Structure formats: structure tokens, C-alpha cells
Length: 361
Image (cartoon, rainbow, N blue to C red):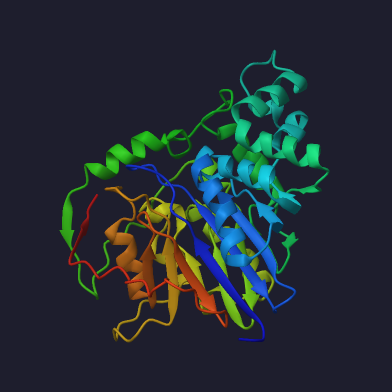
């Protein structure tokens, strides 16, 4: 098979209710493919990424390595990739470089620029380790802020100013001067609340997804990427929440990028109902399909094999209404491809069905 093509692979990450992201992409023409890794999950999934690239892409080189945000279940596996493969560019946020600019947000007036930078490096150790490994190997490091371009992918969010506002509200950073309820939510608390959810009826024409979901500032800081590959849009969202997704839509509109026409979309934050709303889904997935016609796009969600909370049925229903078939990892690798060779032993994935009952508030 010749000509331009691409493939997006979601590898399984996590155990129990702890999900993560490990995404590998290859795109271009035979003989000149580019390889990108977006998040690496855990150390275990990082090894799976290395093995996957060698076996299915036939290379030991990664052109672009991207960490969307510093959570361990997204960053730590990238260490393995850096240790075992050659890498062209590393893209990671380095908030410790901006200690002087953000120090005024913290209550402790005794904190210095040096001590804040040191603490950020320690608390966001997996992200900082990526910088250390890149420096050791002489790999150039860039920060993925809106306006940057990573290969063929535009960075749509976060912009630098907003990112630096978010950092002092990270759950692991020193106490900020003021922290809203949304910014203080712990991931454990979110899981507990979701497990306590009641069940409500839904129909194709009745959507119960809330408009006011809230997630952590770490999640909102996630890098959102978009590329038009051979006329087919690919949108990767990390663990972004409603604010970040809305900002990404604004920026895409300013660049005249049509996100709704995307053929592939990552479901944000493993399908959490706290990260999307009907109005923001309308902007980057599309308006609800009242006729129930066939899906025109594909959505992948990273969810650990035994998770009881990922993905939420109210979220997968919302994607289905907007013309996107949803496929979940649940312990298995998933592949979306266009104009690329078939893989021996890989079969078509079964999409998530529409659910008549979903999680309520």
C-alpha cells in the first residue's frame, strides 16, 4: 500500500480504576514516516511502547516525544522510551523555569525562587526526569504551548499565560493564596464520587450529561493536539477538562481549523464525566445526530482493564449521539488507521453500545 497514511495506537495502561495514556502514532509516506509518542503511561506500558514501535513500525527512532501533563500515569513510561530508543525532540512543560513569575501566588512569603523551583522539580519528578534524560542524551527540549507545532500537529492548549496560572493550583504544589473547590478536588475524591453515582434513564434524544463538570488544574493543563493528516483530522485531548477544551476550540477557530470534521478523537480523561459537557462536545465533536445515522468518526478512550468508572456511560452516549463510534482499551491495544498496511492477527474492534441507563449526579 503506497501513498500518505497514518495510524494511531492506544496501548493498555493501568489496573483497577487507575487508568493512564500511552499513545503511539506513525504518519507520512513509506520511507519517510514520522513517529510520535504522546504520553507513556506507567513504566510497564513504557516498555510496551518500545516493543510496539520496534515490532510494528520497524524502527528504534521516535521523532517527537510529548508529555501532555506531569501525572505519573502519563509521564513515567516516557522515561523508558528515552532510555531505550533514540528521540529527535522532547516536548514537556517545565514550570520550574518560571518560579520567579509564579512565586507571588503562594502564601509563604519566605519561599524563594530557588526553593520553589527545587520543590516543583521534586513534586513533578516524572516530568523533570524527562528533562534530565533529554539533557543527558543531548536531545532538544521544547515546551508545548498553544502556537507551537510538533511535526504536523498544532498545539491548541494550554497557552503559556494560562498554564502559569494553573501551576500554583496543582494539588502537589505549595499552598496557593486561594484555591477554588474545582482546583482542590483530588483524583481519589473524583473516583469516590463517581462510584456513588445513581442510575438514570437515557434515550437517543435525551442527554443527561452536565454542563458544569469540574476537574483538576493538572488535567486542565493537558496538551491538546490537532493535525490534518491527508485530509483527515486527528484530535488528541489528554486529560483536558471543559475549560481547556473550550480554549482549544477558540484557538482552532482563530487558526481556521475545523475540529468537528476530525475523523479521530481521543475521549478526554479516560471518559470521565467531569471533563466534558454537551456544549463543548458540540464544538469539537459535532452537534447531536437526531436521526441516528451511521457514525462518521472514531473515538478512542484509554481505560484500565478492570475499571468500574472509566469510561462513563453518559460520556460514551454523548459521543455516539454526535456521530463518533467509541472504542475502549480495557486491557487491549487499539488501532485506528488510514491507508496503512493491515497487521497480521489484528482484528476489528467492537465499539461501545448505546446505554439505556447512565450514571446520574
